[in-house]
Length: 126
Image (cartoon, rainbow, N blue to C red; front, side, top):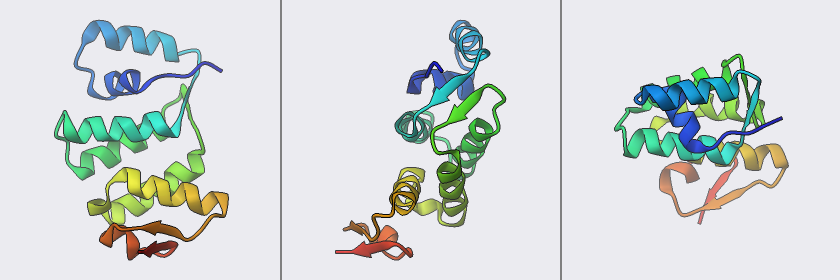
């Protein structure tokens, strides 16, 4: 299966460049894989560049999870991260995703200096 880059995800979500949106949709209509790294980068771009709030970012991730033509790497992990993010949006989606990736791979605890992340089950504040 073919894969897509962060900027393609961003175009599909923001729809702010008609020509690129059309190209992105044409590319993914045959099916496309989304790496967790590209997803994490996309959520950062949506926050830092487009200044979307946590609710809009959560909606964007949900949209990608439910997209008929996209397969997200570890969709179960992404769904768990999304659930955690909705409960604790101050953490940031990337932190939630990291914790769920670590949990799924069985390498807990996740050592962190982050106070908020360190309070979660499975994380250990250093």
